Length: 602
Image (cartoon, rainbow, N blue to C red; front, side, top):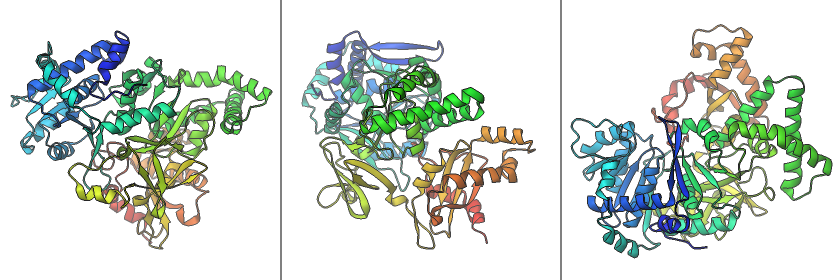
């Protein structure tokens, strides 16, 4: 198979596929999906590349894209690659301060912004960003500040490239492009300290194409991928590039909160997601089962039991299920499993890659039991996403993160740290030589900061080394292990474990408010507001019992001894979560200091 540099990839695919649909995006006013052919995709990339030349873009210059998922993000990024320029994506939810840091660190002159929030944030920092010259606005409905005399809209930007006036320059630059050119600088969320710009070169993506072709053997140009995660996230960015390489139709989901609607409109065969998506599917089904009665409840419970035996006890380990079991499974496959998948919008599923956090064993077992082809993986920004993954119906173990990718070196170092070496691994952090040196061992292996082990060819994660808590009694606690176990409970939406330098383990819990209200109504509990309700003894007892059941597998000193139910969720606005929805533990410890201290009062 041919492996094309990202500067020409879209054009080579357009030569192959022509007027076939390459992209779809949703028109929210008319509630219809618009199609973009490969030829149109290629033309818009060329036009963007020419417009960038008109603006004065230089080779190896950094441009920023500060937007939610839009097809324009792809036109601009591939247009930049045609000029040997570097794309620096920002999360659509990034604050002005975060945007200011990235723009200044990367020395950005031209910044593309999505909607009103991103424009307002970007315009507010211009005077603090000496290099920033111009904003280009994707959304025509954005209202520009009256003082703004330099920003232009994307259609005006495209007009600069109409007729491809600078195509000779673009072509010359493209000819000079090599796999050693820098493609992206992806800034980490920064759960501790300031963000670091991970440098990913074109060689990283070319290697991603090669090794995924070896592993994901059934992925083809007949697939339809729902673009759900932010394109800023390395998982989705590398995946979108892979989809373009494979000729997969990409359907761009603008707003993450709309996924329950858009997934049913598209009914994709592929979709990258994080475990939280599947946790919610699992919780929803558990809720339906709990509310069901009689034969309906019995059938649903039996369907899950039969699926678990058929798919996990037999197919997973390469055994052929008995004929009677096969017949029962096929019956449920055409009835209950099909209805479940159709309700979610995934009945056409080919496979669904999932990574970004640990997948609770119960969720993984359930998803596989009902025939949803989820594949679990592990990766980092610094590894251009995939380090390892499961694939297919057999040869995987619940609890592992799959088999390491072909030709990627994985070893277990000091403190059981997972260390990596290969062509997908970053060469370092942008303008941070000390951080780069610290990230690699003396013999050139990248230090992931994740602890784990290899067994029978599969990789297992145990904890995030930097996240390990040490109690005042000298015991080590892995907070993520507890959080992963407890968050599957339908009454728990978010949870933060507290233990560092404390006498025992405690937790801050954000309940599933709707379910707590429903429980209160059934029990006749009177309350004035959510804060009042969450302090009611019956509600405290409800959570005490559920937590007690879920944490039985943990040793005594690892178990939660006290908890506080929060009337408001953790938020990015207060700095308590990163753009990738990871907890910022230091901020949470500071913001909730009084509540935490209260849990440790004698």
